[in-house]
Figure 1 (cartoon, rainbow, N blue to C red):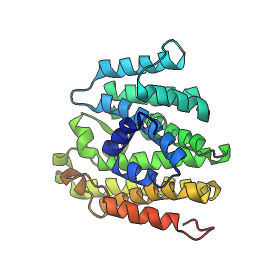
Figure 2: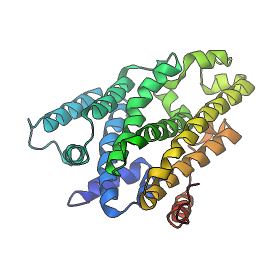
Figure 3: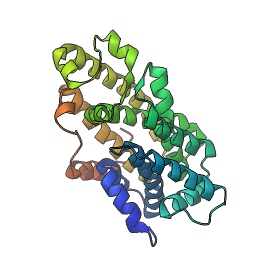
Length: 282
């Protein structure tokens, strides 16, 4: 990744085993651009997820991005510089980046979500626009955009489930409060879940059912992605399916450990996707 490649490789490797290992199956130029995108979103996310949160650091990051985007500063460091260049080369809509940064800013002040509509408003900025940016990096037609958004949404929802314990430690719950109450849960705290184990299991499995509906719809977009570019996307998606399956089998696992696939599983899945028969989709 050019002279600052180690910066982005380090951010990517530390930030996500699934995305980093899956992205290695992209052709090199695409892989580099995916790394620049991930470096930007991960850096912003890390600032709002620190304990304690770095609100001042996030504000400076956002201001630095705006200054570099508007040409007021010649450089804002490799993470922002590469992202601004990527945005211009690949034709990202400025509103997408603003939506992403708005969702990150929400993490500094908003701790719970009253309804699914509120949750999805956050998810649009935190994940769906990243799917749109990925579509531009891959050179996909706008017809694929709805599927790209849904794939980002589906993956984010599994992240919410997988990270219940971590988010609670930050004082956050992303799942709709009205749905928790309807399920008979006052919260998703472990003590509450263990006092109402059946209600907790049913709630988690209902959320996974929602994820699977979105995922199935998102997969309709695979048919429009060139085979060589489709393999890494399918690999990441399959790993999220694997994670969802483990959580569905034992919802309480989220309180014991962070569920994530092994490096070997990601590699083998990626290799199979690269070697799939021509025309194969599923």
